[in-house]
Length: 366
Image (cartoon, rainbow, N blue to C red):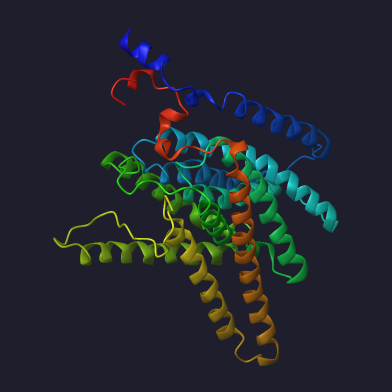
């Protein structure tokens, strides 16, 4: 009885999304169904690409879904919203990619486009990590649509004007997602430094570690799926991950006072609230990866000096274009989606599952 009374007397703000989220989702899905019926006739897919799609799909659903489950009061929202954004975003991404292919007068089978659509969602999931617990479902859904449009247009510009190959432009997905998310996050109010709602627990850390293992296992497939030299991409990715894991274990022991292993926690170098640390988890590695690519390109083409400057300029130009567009559009999206129209989540309700999900058994003492 007491639970029922408390649940019924909760503020009306707990139900403010009834008139927005369902209609936004259903409207988008109706548009997707109509466009898919027109643009995607059945053409008898080759199933040889399906294992690659499975790996990418597992990575996105299980890997990122669990990887971001480190907040003690935000587990339902992390996995639930990740799935919602994933299924909406893949459909949206395929349609955007279709229009770009029509513009370029190119063709590609549907399963290959589905794989690229799932891979493009990496940018959205990474950006979501920067505002995890702060952005509401309406803001996340609209951010997904806007970010996918901009990311695909950035890839199109890299391909059209800089002749960057598809597999290289797709590898910029981590760079784009991290800095779009950071710019988007800068428009949100920061949580109180005294709050413990964004704290971790051993259980939430274990679930996050499970997600890390999923990402670790499937990352070679992700990096190689669009590559012309798949064996080289798999080989390099696997041993790169292996060396990183060994280094992480070694540094973990060396940096603790009692010489024990621990889940490393690096402080973000930016004075900006970044819930899941996308800057140092995805952003900085992407920057270092782009720098390493330029260095290796110089070493490989050292004997071909006439074309070396052009090749370096192309890679640096693609990097600068991607990060600039991500920062500018992320900031614009953040400013727009923080208008009162989109019912910004109050700071007091940050990192709370109960603001979006029903927990009648937790109503007392929450």
